[in-house]
Amino acid sequence: MEKISYKLDVFEGPLDLLLHLIEKNKLNIYDILISELLDQYMEQINLMQQLDLDIAGEFLSMASRLIQIKSAMLLPKYEEAEDMRRELSGQLIEYRKCKRVAAMLSQRISFDSFCREPTKIKADMKYRRIHEPDCLIPAYLAAAGRGKAKIPPSKEAFEGIVARRIVSVSSKIYGVIRKLRDGKSRSYREMFEDAQDKSELVATFLAILELIKGKRLRVDGDGRDCELKLIIGGDNQWTEEN
Image 1 (cartoon, one colour):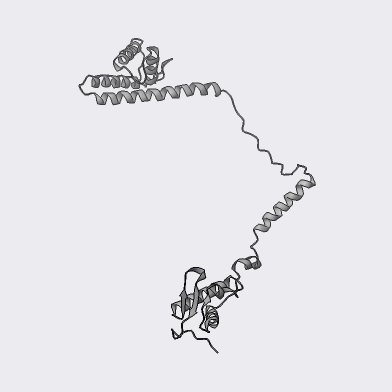
Image 2 (tube, helix red, strand yellow):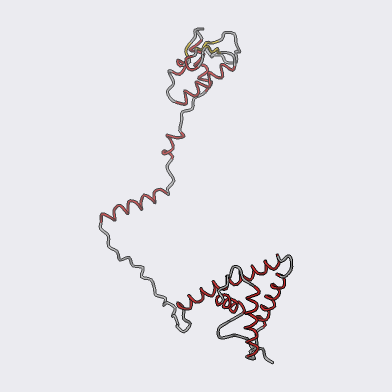
């Protein structure tokens, strides 16, 4: 015998029937009384059988599920029953939300209507806006400036940053010795008086450090106000060429 799919005029499945019974009896969907719900559900199943309706297997499966939950709740420890009851509540809550959304969509969507796809129209690429000359000139200059920004800068643009005069540290060592060869003390600041740029300042500073390291120069005092004096008979690796 060909199986006939069961569908009531009101209920489309066991969850729909359970939701109807919960709303009809004003039960708390978050805390379902399984015993009361089972009795009402079985009454509906019996009514279907009296009307000789072909009951779908999913309705009978839900009945056995309710009976299982009720039987588990009769045990001393019914933690498993609570888990099954909460799972059933979650399914009912989700089904209720889907049913409400479906009712809202049914008011907006009609399957009896036909929507034609939009006709493809060739785009008109002709520019039709009109601009005043006062607006066009700044726009052109701005566009031209953006184009020039992509051109690599010339070497002259970096001369003020990376181009520096090369000053030999050895030449500044001889210069410091020349200033101190009379055996008199000179101030630290005096060593930098004839420096013309930063390169020469750095070279002079390195020359003083090199002479101190070679024990050819003695420093008296602290800071920039100290006195420098040439040590006679020290390390002679630096000698001034005559």
